[in-house]
Image (cartoon, rainbow, N blue to C red):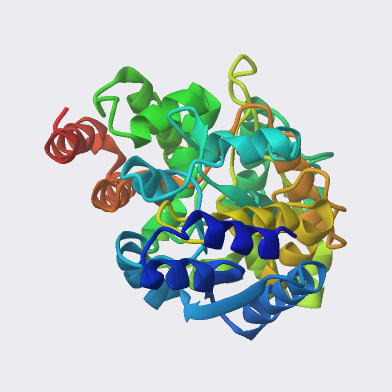
Length: 417
């Protein structure tokens, strides 16, 4: 560590400054302030472990950590960043990161990406960590989205393997429905569960580049490519492949359809596996959302948690050392286990859980980019209106044109484009 030499150099350099200024600078050097958002004791515990290990390997650095409940953290973060920020904060990639990068409140970490080989270790999350070609985030963990399915129900109706293509998927849905099994469970009362369907259909039909342009308000909702997402979705609805009355169920109420064998599949994030009973877990498989157009680079939803250095941080040298420490394969795996997620580091050891292992492989090998999920990739107001439109669409799929026209009016109002 360079803490003491840096303190000495700072004191010499400021010898001509006022005594107060010199004392203030000396006091700041060697103290690293870290603010961490957490939810639950296990998340706090793993961050405490990692910070303790950092202190052992950097004995010249004093670490002052503040743990803040996740909901309170969201409210307080903007004030910290604009007034008296800590040296490290944790946050989210994608639009939520870009919001602060655009306003000059996050430090440019591009040199760290080049110096520490992050380009290789975090290739799949680089795009989500970037704003206007520069990186402002150090990824930590993410989780996979994909299709959960009942292996016993697939076997029962003669489905030999997991569908890789859209045609195979449609054929499997047809077999399940013919056997009196609802092919797909969805809890549409929670609008974000519908947003997962929108994301994947758009990513598979149009690719992540178009998807991000749409999320940024740069594409009209009346664009034929957006309508194609809804017409493809409508085919599934018209064929009766979703559970009946899906808008009356939230996620908790929809999951029992899967658990009780009344529905065969559900598109969802791997975070739900904690609620699987041992019996259900034995029967549950997990596969990548099927490929619709093989010419479209395959992208995935993988919401990324990340670390950042505020632009106004006082101790950026030790902050960079902390990021370098946390962005190793082993620490990535440690954080992932404690946070109930997957390591964003492609060089981390694979997780033990079979479903997590599949999710890790899907995300680590993704070549078409990682999206952050619908309401993390766009402004909250537009996301809320978009998800409301999805619920209206599920209620009456014939109203695609009027729903998209309304969303286009909203987009022009919000983005003034």
